[in-house]
Image (cartoon, rainbow, N blue to C red; front, side):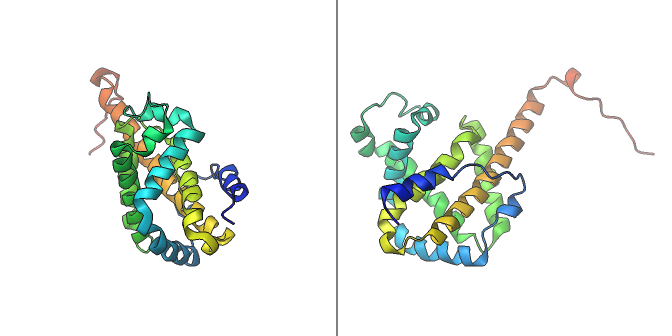
Length: 198
């Protein structure tokens, strides 16, 4: 299950699900339990997973480096593997994944967390098209760690969680984009508010 071919399959079918309704993407109770059980193994290697995830992201999607001004001009992947900045960012992302896993039993708290992260990504100029790439690279990075524990069902559980979280992040990004657009529209261009009070 942890072979290169299943890793390719993970990327191939990690496309967008055709729904704007995040609730429709929520992991099931069984999937939540599988994710939590596997996270107990993964968390021992979170720094390593974070670096592997981003080096692979930059290998498979070099255009993602444009979002990270610190790594934009780095061509040497070995230099990326030893970068303190990349390690720090990888740990931040892994910390978000850890918080997401911890909140799977409290989906309203997870929703707030993911919406806020999406809003902050608007200010980082990190567009939503990149969000699903991280989930695919995370899955590829953790398969060798979980070894024989990795199953098609576990892969589907993690994909479901990432689809759910990224759909919320995208919603947060769009909300913040609309808010910022509203703030930048001059008062004379704004729709006139009519007083409807009696």
